Image (cartoon, rainbow, N blue to C red; front, side):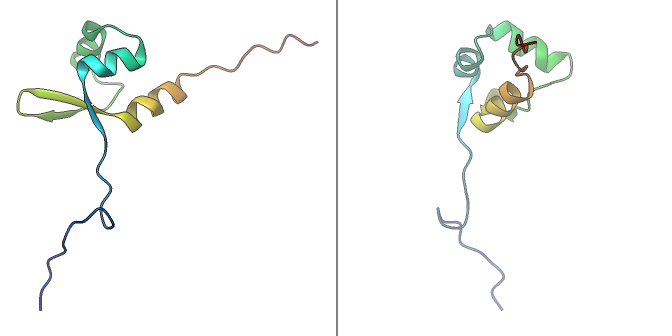
Length: 76
């Protein structure tokens, strides 16, 4: 019995990964801010491949959503 599964675009979604430079641009933060975030205990998940650090775009967008504050209600 063959227990292997072929990975194809129909069976697996591959996350979009961006380097630290692109992640800093998306978040409007410095690269040093991202480095400090990783050293201090990451608030944004990251992927480490050898010496390279990558961020999933979905994680960056989730971080933005989680840190979005509602506008103050000025109608009283």
